Length: 250
Image (cartoon, rainbow, N blue to C red):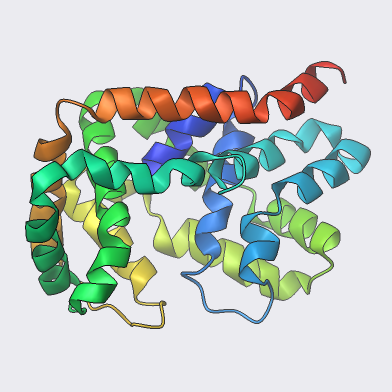
């Protein structure tokens, strides 16, 4: 699942402030794509419960930020089911691995790790074509997101250097993600290229090849991407229910 997929799950698994939910659902994308000496991977990627407890106590009106973070993670969120998405490509898996290896200039073994990302990018491309209101909402959030406030909340709760946290949050929302890129497969490929350049393998993405690969992958998903998203939404909502119930009790 990538940017639009995570926004879709967050806003449909939780009935709340979409701006905070979507912003929270994007935050885990800082790791591992942004090299840093601030957060440990698991500390932040799976830090939704810790952030929720802090926001409940100090800023209850902001708690949807933490619910968005929870909607992303492996323990409760969409990433718990990420590997299942690879099954959607069926017998084309081997062919896709060859093409990913070429598009990202990586080995076949690394391509295996990237496969679920390309499935996520394909779902994003399908969402661009089928959910224009979601795309507009995400674009609006990227333009209006309060980087200073989010950085302050994260730094305060996780006890990190606020300046360093702000650099990471700004890189995510103003460098990686750009509203104009959420309109085409090529734009999604550009986002992907900016992200993976920070990984240890230093992928060098061929934008044209990646764009074509995203579209080809989307064709493979045409008959079952909606059911996969709905299944993921239902399970994430169920996993988050104790936290959502806590929200209603406020």
